[in-house]
Length: 354
Image (cartoon, rainbow, N blue to C red):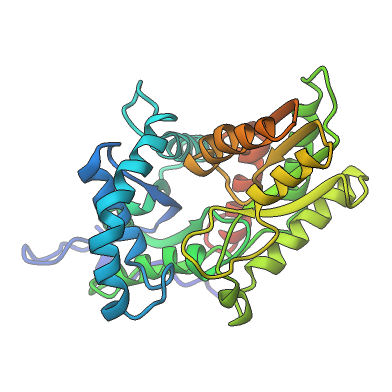
């Protein structure tokens, strides 16, 4: 059977088009990496804009708007921007005047693009769910560059409605406005992908090899989630637990050597446990002197890792009797981290690219 052409002859340059004909779409394929987001600065108003957008997302905070918005726009956004701004200021990338998350995500996109060897039919870009560059703006840019197919990759190994789903929600909202929609695909969770597990385990081994001491306990710290989200069906806790187990098995360690915790809880209701801060304090009080922490849920270092763990958690451990603490960085744009992203993208593009 003769293969059908990619586009009708009427859409190629072999037939002259009327002057009022809309732009002709090419057959380029777009890849969009999507991360959580970042403020544009550390002062009050940039922080308030960012936090307002983030904490107004119904996927993140699912309280009714009539109840939540007065609390958010009043009490919370009157005080939290200053506190959060100070945390961002302590880890800010002053060379580029941006947060490390934005710097690293851009570097990941640059390296992924380079991995395709400059193919003109593949366009790699990146976006933030909250803040800039916005998902809708980047999708429009891909569309304007001729991408008739787009792969969205939310950069979260473990799926949660509060992260993966809301990133894709934002992309779909933009699609609603397009008369000619590109074909789209979304990347699912990769919490148990062998390449990802190997990359995390290897990063632990390589980091510990640089120390002149050995930790008694290593904690895999995942971003927290309200417990009722889990009971409502969000699989995030299960994905985190499986990642922890597979990494531990790959390292050949006992359960008490690699322990799982959850960080960054917000508000009065119960979140996934054990809590990182309470666990670290208790370990120190119980006589653990040497501790390491890694955050496998983040593919790029950010305020939750560089400030909350490498600064706050370190201080909590040392103040309660600990003596040696180390933070194991995220995969970021390392060779191991990029192998994971590149392999997943190429797998999900099968059938679209030769």
